[in-house]
Length: 278
Image (cartoon, rainbow, N blue to C red; front, side, top):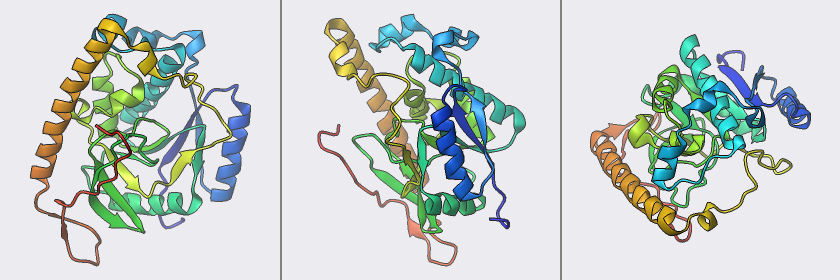
C-alpha cells in the first residue's frame, strides 16, 4: 500500500458506541490503514441542522415523519460532506456498523487513482434495492465500477469527492426523506449512482441499526398519505427513467474496461432483479 496514496478514511460513530469503535479498530489493525472517527450527531440530543427538515413538505409527499435517529444520521453525513467540500480532498466514508472485506477494500484503494472523473461518489456496499440493474463503466483490479439504475438505499460505505459533496450539500438545503434516499435521487442531486462490483463492504451482523426498529413503512402509509406517496413515487420513476435514458445516450460510445484490453460498449446492462421489483 506504500505506493498507493490512501485517502482520508472517516468512520461516522457516536462517542458512546464503544463496542462498535473497538470492532473498527480491530478491522483496521488487520488492514494496516490509517482512519479516524468522525463524531456522529446524536438525534436524541437535537441539533441546529435539524432545522433543514421540512416536515410539512415531507408530509405533502406522503413520507413518514423522520425519527430522531434519521435526523441524526442525516446531520452526520451532512457534516462529512461539509468537511469534504471545505477541505477539497476526497475521502472514504464508513458507518460504524460496516464490515470490511480486506482483500476487496485494498484492491479498491489501488483502483482509486484510475477512477474516471465522472465518478464523484461510489457506493462500496451491495445495493439493497429490489432492482439492481447496472451498466459497467470500467474494470480493473478484479473490480467493476458500474452505473446503477436505482439507488442503493443505504449509506454504509462510499467514496466521496469534493464535487459530490458540494452537490449533496446543495440538494440538502431542505430535508424531506432519510439521507440515503435523498443521496439516491441522482436525477435531482446530479450525483450519479455508481457502485462497486463485487462490493467490498457489508454490514456487521453483530450490530443492529441505531436509526429505527426496522418496522415497515408500508404499514404506516394509509389513506390519503398512501395516495400522495404513490403519486410521488410515480413522479420519481418518470424522472429516474428519463435520466437513465439520457445517461445511456451519452455513453453510447465505447468506455474503458481495462487499460490492457479492448474497449467495450456500455450498451450492455447487467440485470439482477429481486422478486416483485418495479
